Figure (cartoon, rainbow, N blue to C red):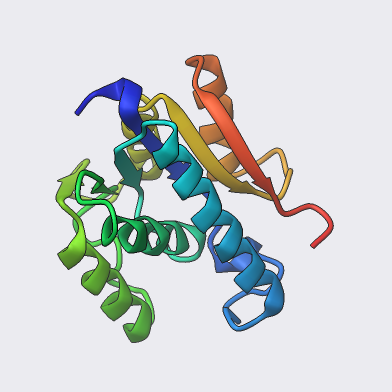
Length: 169
């Protein structure tokens, strides 16, 4: 894939989202619309390949938005960057089914490593950033965590970043 036309994503899991698991919450619906618009704008700017880490929460929202746009844009591709083989093994059944359905629709699936390790999520995040020119993020502004670390790494690598800010929600 061409790095100059690749966009990746980072964002929070439900425990860091103001609405938690309640996706019917108006704030969640508003965020999903912002994500849809950001993905469409990235496409209009020439981004054609989208990388998603497939975590619960904002990652799956992003994946859904990209796949929805892909139904209208046949030149768009989605790559699932899976941190380790059993990523979803301990998730609730509904989330496992949702993820599996999304994986079935992705054009590519890259498993970054086979087994869990304490650094596998960060390794997956570096994999995505190292192959992208744009990072979209759903971020609450807190200085710790995977989203903060991915944003910092992307900025160190000179990537353009677009942050959908959760502060004040």
